[in-house]
Length: 330
Image 1 (cartoon, rainbow, N blue to C red):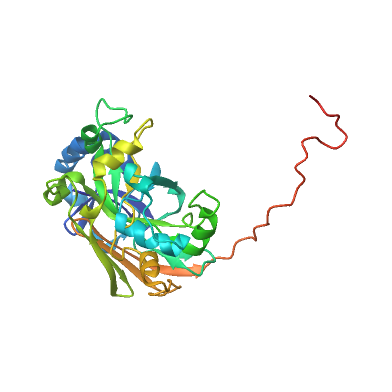
Image 2 (cartoon, rainbow, N blue to C red):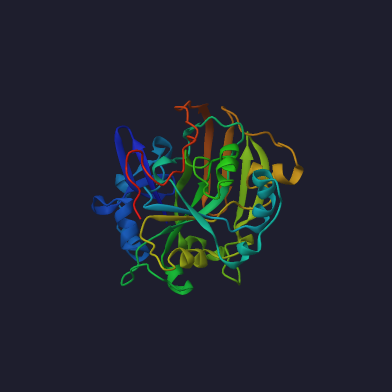
């Protein structure tokens, strides 16, 4: 099954993509409600779909397939870490701590873009993208999504979607020197789409170790920049979900990105390996296309740089421990 959201004239539709048609969910349900009910309930809904209520897919504009409850983005590809670390931090390495656990950061669910959108960018001179596969969490009867083991975590994966983690590498490099982030280097945009493909659809691609052996490709202005198998991750998706739920909780609508695939899944990896900005950073008007086997493709055009208010520098302040005119206290 494919789950989508779309605009049809002035109306927003939510439902199934069935062949070349979009069909609203029965009972007027929304994607968030379907995710909460879980995969088995979604299958029952699909069996009740009303094909007569469908519209040609070509006649609607796709939105991001969900409004995420949260977005965790992992860094699960060793080859990516090895290459991009040189372009961001000046030193190519995979630190020993990377192997101990699947590290992630939280990013902004409020700046999610759809395939087909023109993506406005900040004042960056090193605009990059990151090709990822993302898991979407669904509900499981009787589970609160807390402290899951790998088997239970797998049952919480409702489906998958293509993710583009847009990245301003110059902003990212500065802020990560402060030992925090990424923040504004990633805050401005995240593309998800074109739809959610349910987990059962990708089961034929699982290898013997539980990794998804699907091919992922990045194109810029029609040129193939990089390609990798998602099965080159350091951890399979259920273990990412398990770690996200460790002493915490995952809920329906959470999105968990794989992190950037290796072998040219972003420009930054190639900059680090080549020691030069080759290929050049993205500029307004460039087209970015990402394709993941069994899931679909997303296409965006880079928009114009948006000037934001200037950021003041930190003030040089006294470190006095008392306030003027206030007596010292023990």
